[in-house]
Length: 91
Image (cartoon, rainbow, N blue to C red):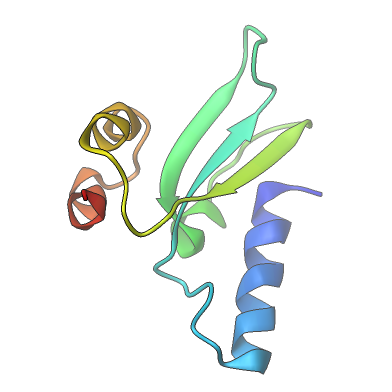
């Protein structure tokens, strides 16, 4: 499954269930082909990640928690679609 498909499915389920678990603004990290020369890592909202071209498999999607250590946020900034998005996550 691609990262875009995973994001779309999570958002569709949330739309049906209306539980506020995964919204379009939920922060996540998409990873493709980690450890290879053409790896791709992008942090952003589920809505943003739906539109990123990650290329071929293998894909992984990490849902970021609501309280993240400052060092983790600093690291994610280097991969972020929108650096300001991460400011609200610091513990």
